[in-house]
Image (cartoon, rainbow, N blue to C red; front, side, top):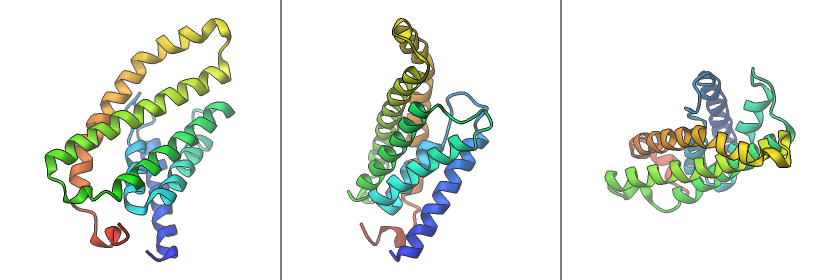
Amino acid sequence: MHPVRRVALSGIFVALGVAVGFLLASVPNIELVTFIIFIGGVCLGAFSGAVVGGTTFFLFSLFNPYGIAPLPLLVLQILSGIIIGVSGGMLGRLGVRRLPVPMRFVIGAAFGFLLTLVYDILTNIGAYIAAGTPDTFWAFIISGLSFSVIHIVSNALIFAVLFPALVSRLPDALWKDR
């Protein structure tokens, strides 16, 4: 893929990720940012997926109407975005496009579940570092569980539905480097 095209597509994925983040910001624990970053990695590869992921979470937090995240949380959000984008890039190299739809459904659900779990663990740690005290550790963990369960299950479902449908419809040009 030509470098200019890769940069342009990366910018489109970042803009789309930030836009859907703001679109669903008022809906607790339901989001499409993770999926957009993941598909960016699938389409563009691990390195560009990392750039898309880190940049998307940085810009989403920077311009968030609820305020920018405290620094420890922001750093772990960016790290999570990098992990999500790299994971998509690695999966894109494995030929998932040729797999039967039921297998893509399972793969989508598994990646949605695992990547959201990693995101929630890291960001809960970041929130604790930013605002917690030794006495509040378990309060952070327990209070975050209900939010995390909803977030993880909803993303597993989002990935399970959207991943198989989107992978088969991606243009051939995006798979040339795979």
